[in-house]
Length: 169
Figure 1 (cartoon, rainbow, N blue to C red):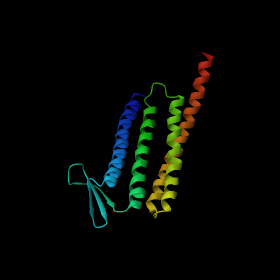
Figure 2: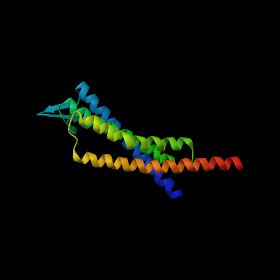
Figure 3: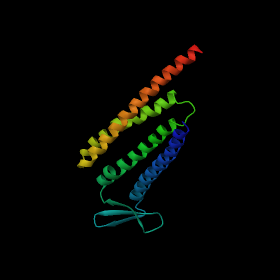
Figure 4: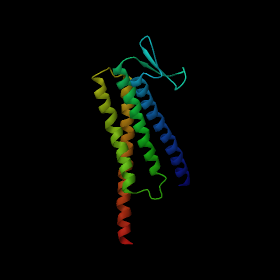
């Protein structure tokens, strides 16, 4: 059990850092776009530079549709994904695994992974074409969501058994 606690803590910190990086990137990209700071426009591309440098950080198409549907939604979406993933990993190093709070973390994760990629892709398809690889990503999120759904049901059963055990003691 000690190995799983160590691994889950390491993965918790990695996914928390990734979540922060994705969210900061999204906020910085929108800030640069809206305020026109750290933004260079060349041909049909908008180049967002690192703060206080001329070194390229993000290279985007220079139109609002691209910014929203090919940059902002995926970056903020994966920031949310890694935030929820970090909470799933945090579940596995708690002293008590079978709690209602842990089940809620698992439930949020599987609901977001089952529904959000599909809904966002359908919404995006009204404004720009969806590439074939996106369907693979949606499928992977669906499989991940179903897997965590099964884990959530196991945790729910564990909580039920744990509560029954508490009644008998």
